[in-house]
Every structure is written in C-alpha cells, then in structure tokens.
Image 1 (cartoon, one colour):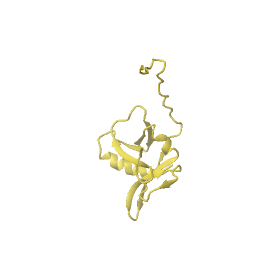
Image 2 (cartoon, rainbow, N blue to C red; image 1 turned 120 degrees about the vertical axis):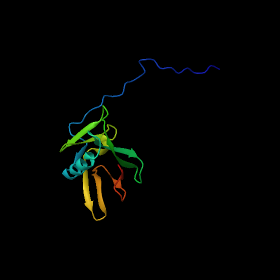
Image 3 (tube, rainbow, N blue to C red; image 1 turned 135 degrees about the vertical axis):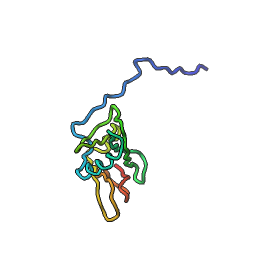
Image 4 (cartoon, helix red, strand yellow; image 1 turned 135 degrees about the horizontal axis):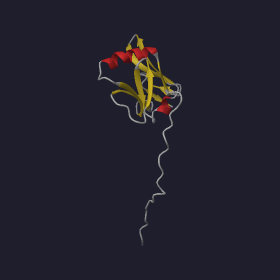
Length: 131
C-alpha cells in the first residue's frame, strides 16, 4: 500500500489579505480617559502609548487587556486624542468597533472602562464580555 503524498506548490500558498484601515477608528477615547492617560504616560518612557486589546477568556468569553507600549507594530491602528496615543491591533479592532474608552470615578474607585455596543453580556467587573 502506497502512502499518499501531500505537497504544496507555490500556487497553493495564498497570501493573507491586506490590512484594511478603517476610516473611523474602532475605539473613541473620551476626554476623561485622555487626561488620565496623559498623567499615567508622563511617568513612563518618552513616547509611551496605551494598548487596548481583546483576548479570549474572562467570565463572559472575551476580556479587555490594557498595557503600556513604547513601540507600535506596523499593522496597529493608532488613535490620538489630546496628545496621547492608544493602539489597537487589527485582530481586536472588529470587537471594539463603535466602542468608547472612558475613565470613571465611582464610589468603589477609579478605572478605565470600555462601553462596547457589541457586547451582549458582561461580567460585574466590566472587563469581560461576550458578543
């Protein structure tokens, strides 16, 4: 019995689609979030930016991840407001479409929050959601 051969030719390899940059950023940054980010980023290395990403996990299926970055990736979407920059990767962008990043002060404390119109459910802490 002869084993089947599996081989790929150069014509079988398909390049990934080009990154399409939306005309409208997937995430709006409120004035409150921009002001708080300006304070936080002023304590970081010059050129620091905030990254907002969506990852699998959390109580509801997806969760937001925030990090401070000093370099943008070539395919990042860059959102500027009042001198600060928020980065979003192209995989996270569709999940954030129409969302708003805000910084709120409540009785229990202060935090960044994302208001996502696509979220059909979220957990009590506000960092996990489902679509």
